[in-house]
Image 1 (tube, rainbow, N blue to C red):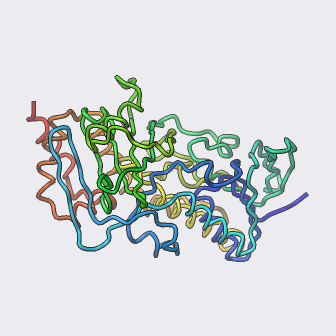
Image 2 (cartoon, one colour):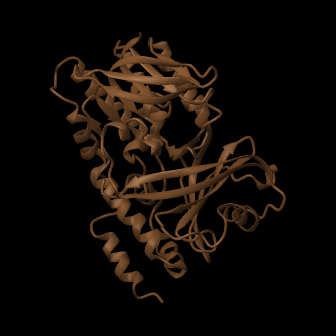
Image 3 (spheres, helix red, strand yellow):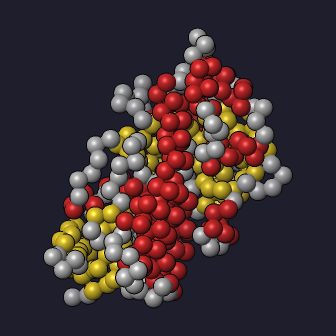
Length: 391
């Protein structure tokens, strides 16, 4: 029976970054992924900031397109923030994970595709017996691991078997089309976010460039218990027909899914020798849905804690959760408050007014709000008071 220092379940950016750091440190690591290749789970809009490549040692080859402008569109208004320099990238999600998988293997780790995690048993010795199933043959096998990393996203497949999960999850449901457009309809170097009930109530829609005259167009219904008035796909198609004014788009791909977010930041980060990363600990910006940067950072923090525990520099994995809360805690609270305000309380006139008053904000300051949660002291309560005067 094989034995590893670390078994990572789920080959998303968070799990793979954790595995890369573990392998790079010379420890044995196995990544278990249920899909047979990275094109089968290519479900991310993959927008990120320009610092991400350098921060996580990523090559330019994984970039689908760069962007230097952000446009916010409401039901009756819009504004664009421009920059003369690159502000960020839309990554090719499959290429990102393929690169990280290659890095894990380059440093001596193993990536096992087409295998499904089914069960974990925690032994009195502290080690873990992990059961996985080969989806092609149907055969099961067992693996010993000193530590197990749950990178299964909203499923939280590993952690839910060993710990009690919180009951404060809010859910978002999203759908995205990848469309090919004529060069005249392509919107290069621009991220577009659409808010307001014309585009989708209690959520947002987006248009991201992917290079090669391809656009990602999607809609997210976020933090609501009520059903949408119309099927989600109709909102995506409204953006294509009414905003982009493309009547017969060539649809290359449709994909979608759910995310779940613990509003109180009550996810289980660590249980004995099991660690959760990425979406499994709500490592998502709830205001705009961005998760790649945050997930990869969680993978790094988790790897640091595991390596220190393996070297007996610390007694447990508690430093991982503390590092995450110190790095992200206040930012996520601000973003969560902003998301609850936007997607539960605001109506069309609020969004129209919000775009109008935001239009005077300089580009860099707007980027700080959207991607770094720098809302400023008391800005949310101040905006809410101003919004209350709008009928």
